Amino acid sequence: MRASRLTIFAAALAAAGLAACGNDFEEQSQITRLRVLGVQAEPAELILRDGGPLPSTTFTQLAIDPAGGAIVTVFSLCYQQGQLPAANLDCPGDAGLQLPDAGPLSARFDLNDPAIEAVAISLEDSYDGGVPGDGGISSLLAAGVPIEIGFSADAPAFENPDGGPPPTAGYADQHLLGFTQITLRTEDPARPINQNPQLSDIEINQQPLASDGTSLLHGDIQVEIDPVPASDAKETLPDGGVESLDYSFYSTAGSLSALRSTDTTATGQPGIISVDYTTPSMSGPVRLWVVVRDGRGGVGWLERDFTIVE
Image 1: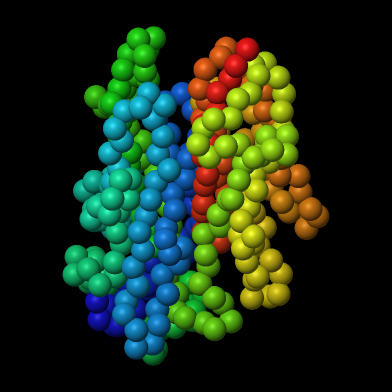
Image 2 (image 1 turned 120 degrees about the vertical axis):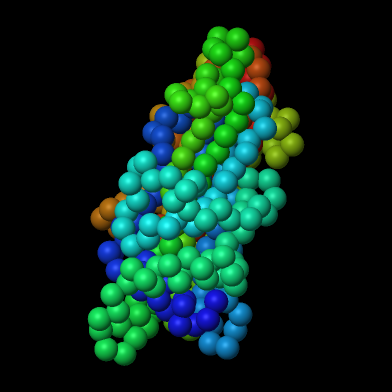
């Protein structure tokens, strides 16, 4: 993509003041059907560097089907940019450019792709220009322009109570749609590229859950779940502060006291990141997920399996 096309692309994206849109689409913390718990871009930002190649990233869904069905995911660059997408926008679909697969639950977004250049050209036709010089695009790119990406997830359907979730209304399978964003901006030595936060462990009553799934918990008891961020999960911000991390909790069984927690309150005070968890009364396997977000587009997650015993 030529630099002029990229400038026009950024202008069209920013023209209507695209609003931020989160990656959560359901409030429930118990996973009983197909869900998308988070979407990660790696790297977490698209950085334009003078004289360097155009950037690219890989999107990955944390898509879960507790019935164990094969999940098919699609990502698309939406043709509608510069405004919050309508809930019924057909992206993925006729209103988006499908991105090439990049492995299970993943797709690649590459600004060097000629098809993406074609989208930029089409956006040029709808952009008014109107302002002398570059139309202020340099300052917009310096601040960061969000790019809207649509995604879908599909998994086999079953008729309850015969072993799995029913199909989504209007579809033969379980079907989910959603939107995520990635920021395109110019390189700035004062703003290092944002890294996705990572979790090193999930603890139950201050003891790590085994990564091999061998941890055992008694049924019908209350325990404390603590996410353990990696040592470098909280990055320094350009103003000298540090990121705050928010956590979301999900499980296939049992009851969580809260869906979310944060390490920093709205008033800047330390927050409580632990949540209480009441284990299910029936013995059997359970899967737990914790998703961490840094508030700047960075996303990470960790899952653990354990077994409930009498």
